[in-house]
Length: 354
Image (cartoon, rainbow, N blue to C red):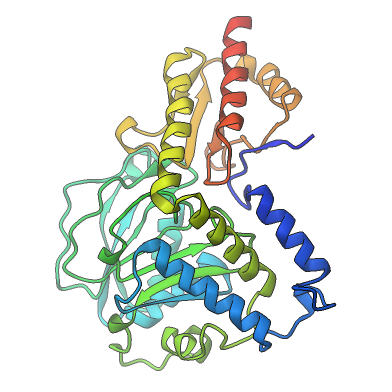
């Protein structure tokens, strides 16, 4: 039985993408070779990389606006350092909304001066700070759009007089935004785009080349752009599967269409959390994530019963992050509404038994 997969990442992918990817691993394009055997310099893979990069810009509405899309390695964690290496000359400002923001802060401080201009740490990161201002004295402003661990999401981004850098690892391609307001976006593939192994970077080229330090080649965005995102051997399977997922999203109607589905799923989930007295949401209501609904039982004595019911219903991956506990329903693009309904049914049934 195929399980209802609420894993926070690596997470669910569309079934048709998994089928096409598995076929390509056996024999790519009737070549007699597996996808993972072909040369990354071959015409076949160069076309895959070019198509994947073009689809990113098309879906984000950034075609012809001076942006480049790159598929790199090292996860979003490498981007914590790489963004600072390429953009930080004097000082940068950061919005601290959770564990991943804190890690980005830590890495950037190895490169230069970092100032935390707002934080929600005082309440366990269960809300998004608002009303802060961004000075033009900084080289760039960094934020994290969605916080998987605590289940918060930035609903309105600040007006920034400097390049805005955003870690969108857990909500990229999930909702309509004016993506041209960002100077640089990065995102690990393993939430809404593909398997673990590649990281998407979308950068406006005119913000690069302004720092005086010498950057190691493998950390230099300009060198990756110049090499067509193949400065070193790319993660072939991860890029190909990401391309298939982007094609699936385009066929679905793009980001506007998937946003409507994501809003429906989130509405079903949060309605149950709010109406069922056995559960309590963690994040402040106005800052709740469309991607990651976090909640706790109000009666811990029901924990074993609830988790047995989840298992019997084929529901997987709803345990909360080890740092906060409780439960987390990750509702990424490929998760069908029926899976959310199945989880809600279990929660409702638990109420009727209690």
